[in-house]
Length: 194
Image (tube, rainbow, N blue to C red; front, side, top):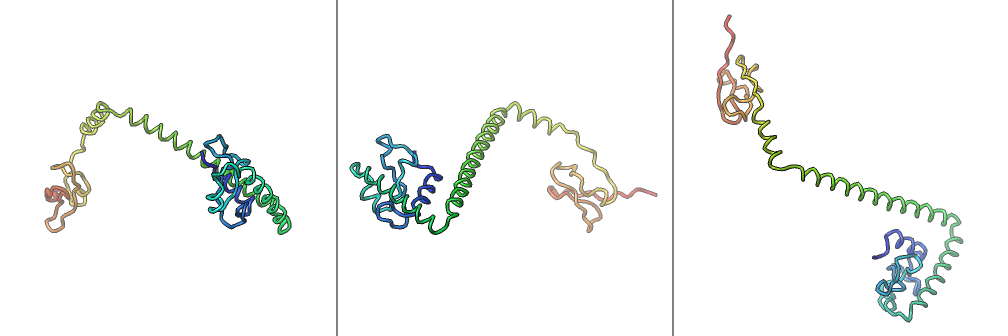
């Protein structure tokens, strides 16, 4: 398993984003003891190395002790330098670490919620079968339709079409009535007699 993003950032901060061997800017976080040999993904087994030093010394088991010593010495140098520059640096670093920890915790909580929702939807989808779908479709088909109300175009517009049951009746002013917007059925206006 690789180092966590939180741990990588902590190592980079402790090293001022510089290689512990050559102090070049821009680092990769290296496993001092390789994972294949049982090396852990902990702060103690992490070393900030630039790409060149990582390539040149990263896979050399003889250099493990030297890399660890250089890392510890470099962390000490950065710590002294940062205290000289700004006494509040450690306070800021602690606050940043706390923010990163909360962000990691929230990401974990969101993943948990996502898993719960996926399980819930899987259960719901599993409960849908052809019998349920048929029952719902039958209920929809057997819904009693209201009767079509004749009258003025204004009274008839907006009703479902009595011909196709799909369209909606719209006012057709040119012919003084209503026409279905789906099938075109025309129904003339029926004004009440006086």
